[in-house]
Image 1: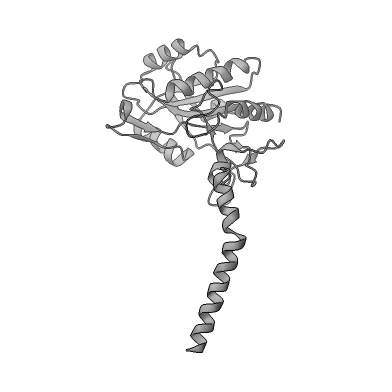
Image 2: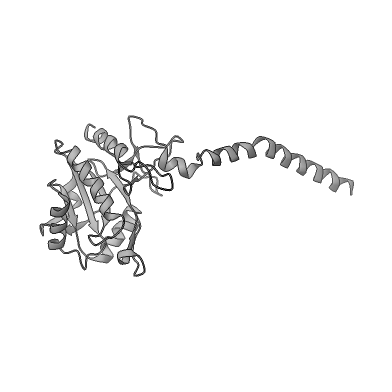
Length: 243
């Protein structure tokens, strides 16, 4: 009985020490918004080098091979982006929610980098049944897409979804109940001249992996307190262009 009493005393003492030392720190981190998930997307280290994304095998994650038809009915593959720094996104032209914001942000980036020859954008529609080359061409003209290396691509839906969900780990799916009938991530992936996915790191040294594309620079941040990342994306594109 005494042995059990001693055990309870020790356990209580350990819990008490933990509470005194660690609980205030945890509460403070929650109050100030510095929990890890918040840091990963909102607090970035502006170091010179950009991180490589490492896959489950310990290798640098590279863009998988792809081949689709663009808005000019031309066959475009990952080989056409060799030697270029480019952004990857998944969208659809009839999207009533985040796609117009994403496209606006990308057009701003296009315009600010108009003097760089080795910059491009790869936009893959997740509604290829509707988004034919003609529809994609009209969309490009409507939004002022002028970069010759900005290809809006369509093809087999299953192949596109596999590229999004398995190739880039950027969510895309057909959901009839969702606005426009589809759900997808509003993130941009950044790819270097050699086809590797790159990003800056957070203050813990972890790569943020993707850049938020659903908040404009004018907005600054959304209702959840998530900050726009177009400015840092521009900075990081320029770093890769200069490598």
